[in-house]
Length: 103
Image (cartoon, rainbow, N blue to C red):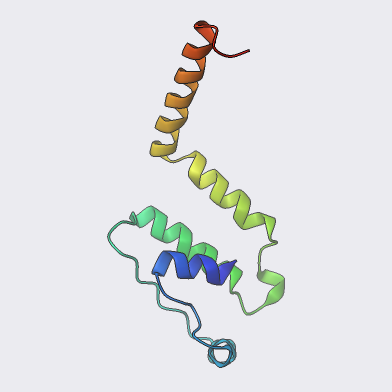
């Protein structure tokens, strides 16, 4: 999940081969995080923090698989765009109910 998130956010692979993973674990160097202009600073921070936690060299410090899902769900839920879309959907459903289109 961590490498997929990194690849989607950075538009490149976190590790180009298995050997790179070994080198990462031995060198203790951080990955480079280079976001394009479409990411807000808040979003960059949340993604970077999530990836760092999931790639922690100490496996006991890594989150469970459900933690990132819950975190990202809360990020999406607090997004102004998401709230606007949700409000639009609720309005359309309510209007359809009033017109007798929904059971």
